[in-house]
Length: 307
Image (cartoon, rainbow, N blue to C red; front, side, top):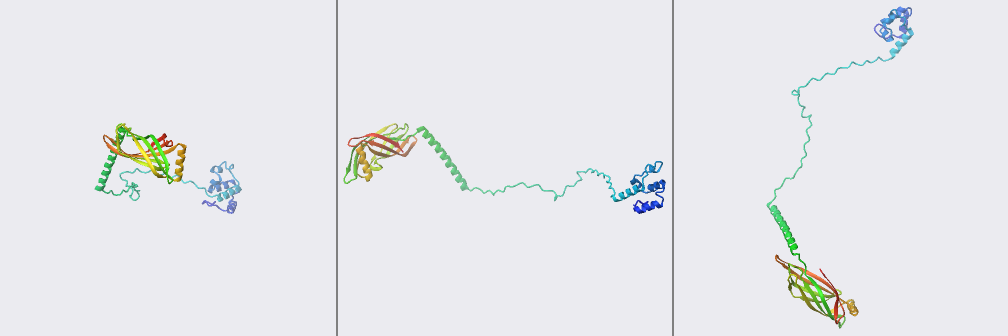
């Protein structure tokens, strides 16, 4: 390296050292090393050229090798000194300007429920609503009144019972199969109510054999007071009733077996009367009768049910 700090070629350095007597004496080598800036890189301090210079003296080969290695290595990068960060100066809130409105995000608008415009109710609608309300009130009141009346009166339907029956005769008329029969029926009709009177406006009693009508008889109107009953005698005679062959055969067989079965059906139009008013309804009864064969057929079994 020359005096300006630039590296010299190895050949120039060796030849120059030989010409200047670099290898001749130790004093010349020390002066050369002190004058060059490479003495710091080779580790030759200023103390080496003094009295103790012989201890730190290195051979020219070692010096040249170190210079070559230093030339090949890149220069060491030194870290820059830390730059102090400037301290923020206090800001007066009164002097700060608000951010522009364009940069500020507007708050989300609240969701709105769109309602249809309300229409004014017409007077006709108000009248209809009032009528419906009044009608519903009347229905409720009527229901309460009916419930109170029902619980206080406890109405019961009248009862019909075939108390007795006598089969007088059954015979076949010519030409066959026409049948005639004669029966006397004793019925017991009672009013079980304690606070209601009943009136039988109309009544009909029909006699059937195997679901075939034999005879029908109407009853005159009559009334029964509370807790009363009435016995009704009916003479039921059928004349020339045409029966299908299979039904006629069953009648003949029953007469021979001494067990003849008849069915009695009744229908009454009943009017119930009490202190607050009256109401009308229909009462139906079905009685199954079993009698012995004529001419003195008696009632041996019966079963009556109301419908």
